[in-house]
Image: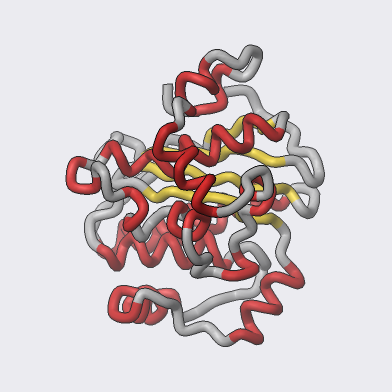
Length: 227
């Protein structure tokens, strides 16, 4: 994929897969570690306790972060996180560039951090991901809506989660269709505001032909990033 010039305040679909397309998230603590990164690395505030935070999340389904820290991250964030799905061998993000050049820096930080953790824990070496990341700009409100549905339907690809996508803890679907677990750290309003209520969005996701719709929208057939 060609190198993309990010534009301030524009929205982007980001995806990356493991280098050999094998699982890179085995246990809940692996998912929790990456989830912590994508949420709390939106600002350049350093964190030194990711392992403890991941363990806390596995036990309590929340991160042990103060409201003050969350407010600081929100006030100084360099990117905006709008939707996400962490899958066994890849991830999808919908993000907004809020400061020039920061989406790339954000992806580098979260991927390098997880690769270092994973290689140490599972005693391996070498590249964990296929490349820096794959990215495509989202150009219309309609694309934002369908892309969010596509991202949130991803867990249907996991056998044990078919029909239970709303309960999948490693995506932002439940945060959009029910209660937002992350407050200001997740901002889905850019597509949720196109629906009268969360229930309407949930119905849209569950009945959506998002993948087909996005495929047919020239010139952005590659918006899905997994074809």
